[in-house]
Image (cartoon, rainbow, N blue to C red; front, side, top):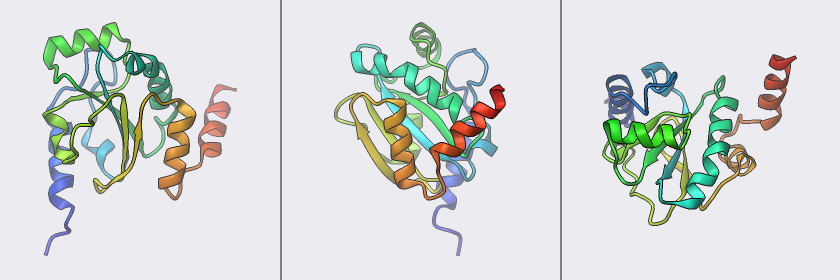
Length: 166
């Protein structure tokens, strides 16, 4: 009998290997290797949502900070924008992390949030571990990760980053 999450993992690998995410800037695609054994921070946003716009710089910083860990930041446009329209909004809002549209995020089988912004922390097997509603800060999301991810340590990440800049 196959592992119960095999179908989820294969579907996730297929999505991330076949679709173009975000816009034409660097790092807009997630490779299959990045989805295997990784936690995912999914942020649901919309251009018309003022708190969403305010938290984008925090999410950009989070994405950079977590780049060398097994946590990936991914956005989902709540208005289901695709293609050039999504790319244009992503560029205008200076979003620096990969994007999925609402249909593509359906692999997670989570209902779209009733309010924005919303940030979900998902385990490597697709289990929703934490829902953060409303505008989040870098510290809030890091604290959430520390709460649900047993081996996560903010100290390890920040010390690695500071060593890399010296």
